[in-house]
Structure formats: C-alpha cells, structure tokens
Amino acid sequence: MSKANIVFLNNKAMAELGAADMSAVINDVERVYVLNNEGDVIAPGKCVMRWGKTVEDENTLGRINAMPGYIGGEYDMAGIKWIGSGPQNYKKGLPRASVTIILNDPDTKLPLCVADGTEVSTMRTGASGGVAIKYLAKSDAKIMTICGAGAQAPTQLEAALIGRPSIDTVYVYDIRPENAERFAKATMEKYPHIKATAVSDIEAAVRESDIIDCVTLASEPFIKGEWLKKGTLVMNMADYEVDNECVKRSSKVVVDYWENVKHRMISTVALMWKDGLFKDEDLHAELGEIVKGAKAPRENDEEIIYFNAVGAGIMDIAVTARCYKNALKDGKGITLPYWE
Ligand SMILES: NC(=O)c1ccc[n+]([C@@H]2O[C@H](COP(=O)([O-])OP(=O)(O)OC[C@H]3O[C@@H](n4cnc5c(N)ncnc54)[C@H](O)[C@@H]3O)[C@@H](O)[C@H]2O)c1
Image 1 (cartoon, rainbow, N blue to C red):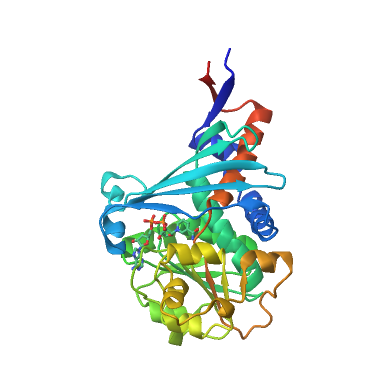
Image 2: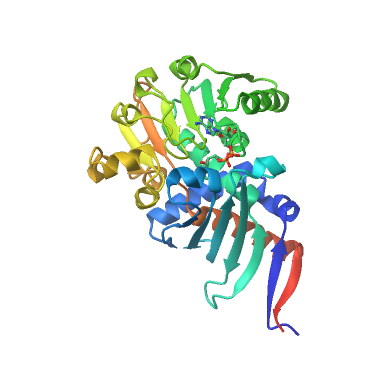
C-alpha cells in the first residue's frame, strides 16, 4: 500500500484535462494576476541555468530555467516549472522548449503530480498576451503584427482573437521567412476570416499595426519607436526586441511582474532601468493592478502603450493545478506509488 502517490499527466492527458482550452487559461491567468496583486502567492525569482558565458551563448547553447511558486485562492497549490530551451533542437525536429511541471501539496509539501507543461507554457503565455490586449489594446484593433513565428505565435494569436475579435489582418515577420510563410498559411486555414501575410518589410507592417506582438529570440531591437502609429500596443513578450524609443514614446509602460522583469534583465525596459533611463516610478502598473481596477487600463485611442512580460511559474502552476484537480475527478492520468 502506497503512503503517497504521484499522478503522471502527459501532453495528451493535459490537453484533454483543460490545458488546451484558451478561454479557461485566460481565466486562470487573470486570476493569477489578481492573486499576485493581493499577495496570495509565493513567487521567488527564476533561477537560470545557462550554458556558455553570455546572453548570446544562451541563444545558441541553451538554458534550463527553474520557476518555483505557490498560488493561493481556489488553486492552493505549490510547485515548480522546469523549462529547457535547446535553440538547436529544430535540427533534430524537436521543439525548442520542453516543460516539466511538478505540483506539491502546500500542506505536506509532498509531490502530487508530474505533468508535461509544454502546452501549458505556450497557452499561458498566449493568455498573458491576451489579457494585456484585453486591457491595453484599442477597442476596435484590426491589424496585428506578430514577430517570431515559432511555438508561441499560435497561442498569442488565439488569445488575441478572444480579446479583440475585431482583428482581421495579421502580418507575420520572422528572421526565417519560411517560418513566417508557414504560420501565415496555417492562420488562414484555421481562421478563414483573417488575411494573414508573411512580411519582410517590418517597418511597413509596424506603421499600419494596432498591436505588435514580439515573441522572438532577438537580442538586438528590430522594432523602432519612430515607426509606431498613435494608439498602438507594443508587446515585448521575449527579450531585447524593441528599441528604447518604443518605451519613451509610450504614455503607459505596463509589465507582468516588475521584480521578475528586473531580475531577468533581458527586455528593453529592464535594460533601460539598468542604465538609469527608466525609473521604478516611471512604471504605470503591473498588469494585475489593472485587472483589479486599481490602475487605469487604456484611456483613449491615441496613447501608445508598451507591455513587457517575462512570465512566472505561478501561471503554469495554476493551469496545471486546475488540470490535476480535473484528473482526480475524472480518474485520468497514470498514478504511480511514490512511497510504498
Ligand atoms: N513572456 C513569457 O512569459 C514567455 C513565455 C515563454 C516564452 N517566451 C519567449 O518567447 C520567445 C519565443 O519562444 P518560442 O517558444 O516561440 O521560440 P521558438 O524558437 O519556437 O520561435 C522563435 C521564432 O522567432 C524567430 N526569430 C528568432 N530571432 C528573431 C529575430 N531577431 N527577428 C525575428 N524573428 C526571430 C525564429 O526564427 C522562430 O521562428 C522566446 O524568447 C521565449 O523565451 C516568453
């Protein structure tokens, strides 16, 4: 008789248990923003284990990040996201990112569940972008440019379309044009009402766009602030993708978690903060303050808004906790005796 069990949930089980349901994941992510704002979380910084000596090495040699956390409220769950990034994996036909999530009982601290979190990670990152779009994009946003047509792009778009169903034109830009072509084609197959085009002239696309969503591996900015039209939401979802002018021209600078942004020190606003070009008091809000109603969302169609997200393990833990509770209810997953 086992004194403690662990439930193993692979990718298929996780999708069936609710990890693939974008509206539910957006709800999880909004709740995480609010619970974080209320202090009902424990979210230590991300521990980065990188190969090589520099950030550039990280982009070729890879890293594995550990993101532990506890999320309260209806989730009441502890755990850790352990995410590997192998930038050369595509040569082996494998995705760059692989995610394992361990859930722990917040009372006994024993492990309860080991789950594949690869889809959770892209879904919750899409949802985080979707929540930003819900509160920060123009209400009638029509044109969106997605930069970086990799694993994150489909969920960024899926969540954006929930936040702004008015989007009817999508430009896709990628340093590898074949990726942009593939994603534009897949987008039109999945959403026949959308005109999706792979573009090489990023300036022309940006000049037209209401939303610019960057999910690349760039370590040099390729979006210039001088190109932004009034009313644009610029989303810096990954590293150093947009220039300082994008931040300077923004009437509101919003981040997901300011301490994490500074700890990660890889996005435009973080690097500006390090150089003394952006101060703590220049930050308009963390997104959770806006979701809770403590700070203003977009106030008119003129303002340019910059949003930066680095993510937090508590988002993945919340989504996985919901799936795990569904697994217990439905008797799904493989139960392994942990201590016999
Ligand atoms: N903010 C968050 O919470 C969060 C969560 C997960 C991933 N991310 C970040 O999102 C980024 C994308 O992740 P992914 O899983 O989609 O990666 P991926 O490797 O699957 O795709 C990245 C895409 O970006 C393209 N690209 C790389 N450099 C570029 C450049 N300079 N200009 C234009 N395109 C470029 C690549 O060709 C590729 O198609 C990563 O940097 C990752 O760290 C952020």
